[in-house]
Image (tube, rainbow, N blue to C red; front, side):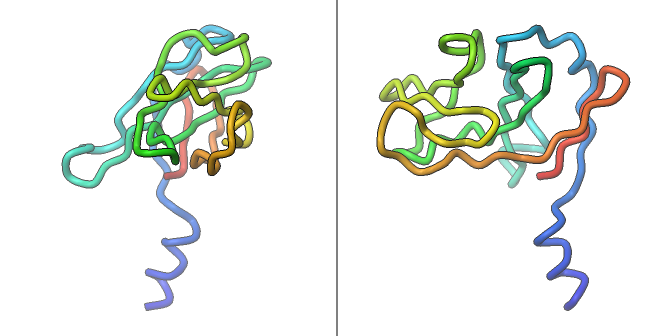
Amino acid sequence: MFGKLLKLFRGRSVVIQGTGKLPEGEARTVDVGDVLAGGTQVVLCRLEGRLYALDTLCPHEGGRIAPGPLWDQKHVMCPLHNYRFDPRTGVCVSATCGKARTYRVEERDGHAEIWV
């Protein structure tokens, strides 16, 4: 029981290969596990030289945060209602909306370890 509780707080780590090739100001979507069987879809973005990860599910009406160039080179966007989010914090900067879920990321040797 205690182990299950700790797992809820720690999450599991997954290594994503080739993240070093993601250019500054860009976002791309990756699947962590089988999305249809309970996996997670994550958007990775590089901002100010660091890699950030957010859940692609927009907290406003279930849209999806889109890959591609960052809006104003600093925000990811959900095209459903053009809501923009700060990838560092998940905070919506363009409207009153909940935070997008963010994940801890550590990048080493061109690969990223993400805790989901």
